[in-house]
Image 1 (cartoon, one colour):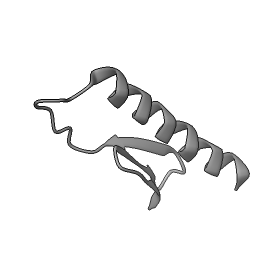
Image 2 (spheres, rainbow, N blue to C red; image 1 turned 30 degrees about the vertical axis):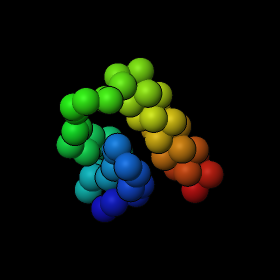
Image 3 (spheres, rainbow, N blue to C red; image 1 turned 90 degrees about the vertical axis):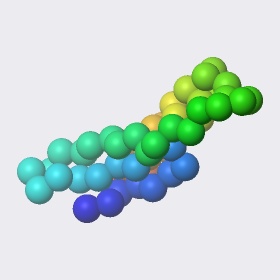
Amino acid sequence: MLIYEGEHITVTRRDDGTYHPNFRPIHTGPGFNVAQYATDVANELMWALEGLVEN
């Protein structure tokens, strides 16, 4: 079951009740900034987890 869908990650819940973060494909090339990508992923993980804690 899809729990969170972001630009860089999704979070699904498995049948046993555990949560599984999944990375979307990464498109690197000119202008790709590793630090910005890592920050964006960290933010999405935080938002997904905040949503789970509230539920």
